[in-house]
Image (tube, rainbow, N blue to C red; front, top):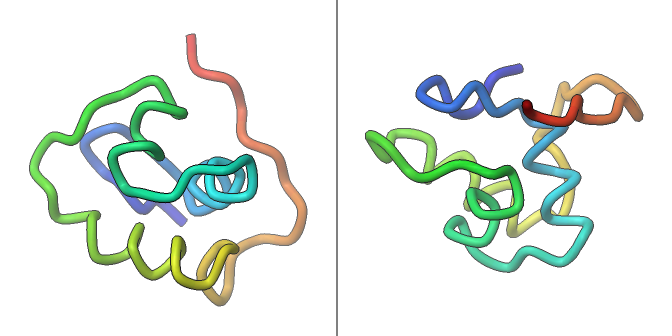
Length: 68
């Protein structure tokens, strides 16, 4: 599922960033190589940060595709 429409970030990408050590929404954006745009995704990202994993219903162990 897409978490951030502006940057096209998926639950898997956000979860990977959290598992790699990100502890804030700002750090997640930096790890994914993008910047916050409209901010509507911050609540969902914060939930993923709290849980330490992608939100319920995220697809298994798929890895994020590196951004070009």
